[in-house]
Length: 452
Ligand SMILES: [Zn+2]
Image 1 (cartoon, helix red, strand yellow):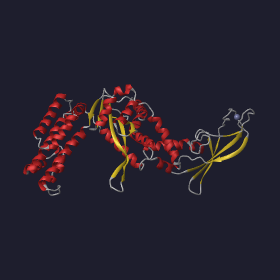
Image 2 (spheres, protein in one colour):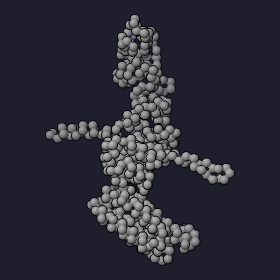
Image 3 (tube, helix red, strand yellow):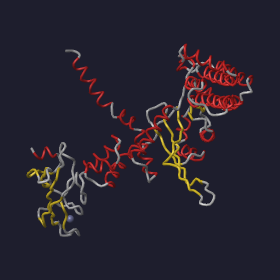
Image 4 (cartoon, protein in one colour):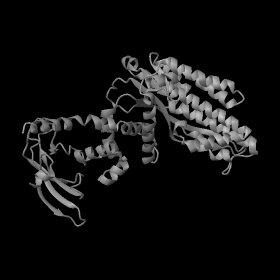
C-alpha cells in the first residue's frame, strides 16, 4: 500500500517514519529486474548495495526524504566488457539525482503558473539550472511547433531592460550606451498569442523574422496592425506585399488629444505668460477636453463652451478641440461603433471634412501638423476603420511581456527572456488547447443522463 502511495514504478517501500527534522523519511528499494545496459543480460549476482537519496515531489505539504536502495550487479555474460552495473527505474535514470516527476513539476510551475525558475527551485529543493532546464525542455517543445496561418498580424515593440547612459566628465553631456528593444509579432485573429520576438526595432529586424516564415504563411496574412511607425510600415511593405496595413486607431485619437493639449498649453502661456496651474479656467477643463464629446454631460459641455468662448486664445483651443472631434467622427464609422461595415467613400468624406477644417483654421499650426500626419497615414486609417483590426491585443500581451521581466528582476540572457516571454504570452493558447478532452467527456455524461 505504501508503494502505491509513493507511486514510483518499480520501487517498493520498505518503511516510513518521521525524521528528526520533521520531514517524512521513506525507505525503498528497486524491485524490478534491470538488464546489463551493454549486453542486455539479467543478473542476480550482487557486487554491492548502495543507498541513494534522489529528490522527489512533496507528499502533500511535507517534504520527503527518500532513501532508495539499489544493487550493483555483476554482469554474468563472460564476453561483456562491462563488469558491473547499477539498478535503476524510469523515474530515476542512471546518474540522476532528481526524480523525473519533480523536474516535470518544476517545468509545469514555471510554464503554466508563471512563477520564476528561481522560485520553483527554492520551493522544490533543486538548483536553478535544474528548474530552468526542466522549464526549457517543456517550453521549447511547444514553441518549436510550426505556426498556424494568421489572418491579422500585429507588430509592436517593447524595451528590453532600461537604457544605459554615460556622462562625459569634461562636457557633462550624456551619451547613450545601450537601449535595447524587442520587436514582437502577435496573432490578432486567432489564439496563438505571441508568435515570435526578435531583438532590435529596425525595419531589417522585423523583416528578418518575417523572412523566416514560410511563403504560404506570409501569403495568408491579410491585415497587419501597427502603431504609426514608418519602420514597421516599410518592413511589412517589403516582406508582405499582399497584406494591407492598418494603424491602431487608439494611437490616432491619442495624437489628436495630444494636439489639443499642445494648443491649450500654448494658449495659456500666451494669455498668462506662464504655464497653467489650478485655478485657471482653461486648466480646469483639461480633462474634459480629453474626453469624447458624446461622453460629456450637458453641464460639462456647457462649461467647456463657456470657458473657451471667454478669451481670445481660448478660441484656438476650441478650434483644435473641434478638429479632434471631426477626426473622431470619421473614425466612429467603424463597425464596432455603428454595427455595420461602412463604405470607403463615407470615411474619405468625413476625413475630408476634417482636412477642410484644419485648412480653414491654418492659424492653429498644430492642427496643420496633425492634418499632415493623418493624411500621410490616410490609407492605413481607412483600412483600420473598414476592417476593425486594432492592435489592442498587442498592447495587452506587451503588458504581460513587461510583467515577466519585472518578475524576473530583469534578464541577463536575451534567449531566456524570449523563451519566458513567449511562454507567458501563449499561456492562454495552451490552456484552450488543453480544454477539449474534458469538455468532450462532460458532454458524454450529459447525453447518458438525458434518457433517464
Ligand atoms: Zn553485460
